[in-house]
Image (tube, rainbow, N blue to C red):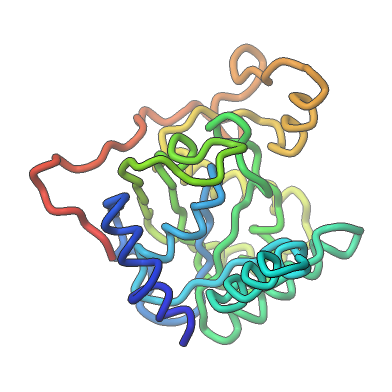
Length: 264
């Protein structure tokens, strides 16, 4: 109930009014049944704007720290996260990935939508980074389709370190569902997992028009934190996931200003 109140009464209308989000391909999300929405991750607000594009409830996993804060601010944050359906997962330690996987499988088995960011963390520079294979395991074990999603402009509205996003149009592009049923039962084959993950990341890249870097985003963040330069995506590094040529696409642009914004 709180999820729909936030979306339709409180936060949702305000975000629509201020940021005028535009959406393409919302019809690709299945009307019923479990499905995985795999998105690029540019900013914290990705998890606020993507639900606005959907008629169905979508659940993400969130850092346990969001639920453990102290004081009034901590309690409000925890209450908001629980209210919008965020599932707390301890991402530290060796069992963190397994906990996230089981959380997703439970959600999908109940016929719900589960949102995941295959890069594992926000992009440090707006480029698309190597996907982690958890999304592939989730797809193969559940049998659910994977719907690729591209968030557009959220990194410009809310770059790293900025709390309040600046006012600008935010875009969401949703692609056709990907079916990996041909690999069912092969979820323990690391080569299959990597191939499936790369296919998902290629689909996201084709929607977003982002430059691809075959390095994990967390690795790149660690490099930048120690003063190293950005990882380059040219030369010996592949132009697209799986070593394929980059698709001939551009970053999507919003519809003409004289057209009504498309949401939902």
